[in-house]
Image (cartoon, rainbow, N blue to C red; front, top):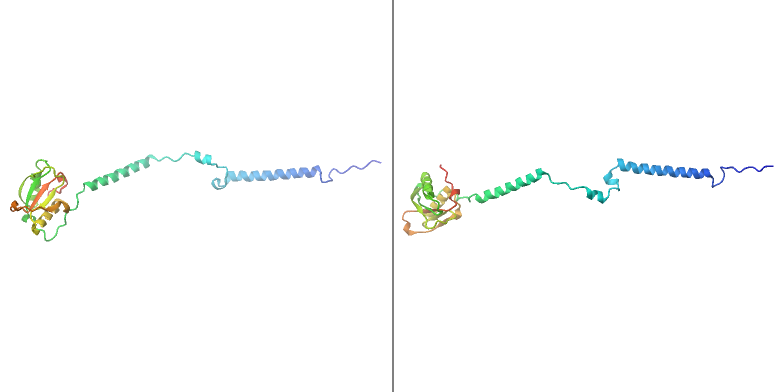
Length: 207
């Protein structure tokens, strides 16, 4: 009598169970690969993609400044430089007019050229006379190297100082360019105006 054959499906080491295990592992690997593929292509690459290396970041060239930005910077620099030059060339404010200042017709003035440019004293004399000042004399100063125009009150009397301030206000001269230089030999002259090389900044427009 023949012996019965053993069942091919029985036993823990059955080839069928081994095949099932291999299939399960393949399915798990496919799911993992699919999940990684989804994150790489559809996820936030900056936040979740660890494959971006420092070399890739450093390889990105820095942005170069545009020509428009350079032009704007140059224009801004020119504007600032121009403003500084304008501020330096702008004369200082003249003394404010007050009610106690004498009128121009009562102020007797001497105009002297201290800059060396011919004809300046005569020109300023004509402007002052048009404005009502009493210009008694004009000519050249002892020195022709005055850089700044100055006004001298020829007496310590209040009238002379107020007259000097009135003249400074009319020409747009700063108060720090007005001083007292008493000279008893000046006769009736109340104020001496010495024109320096900055005379072109004076207010000499016709009124």
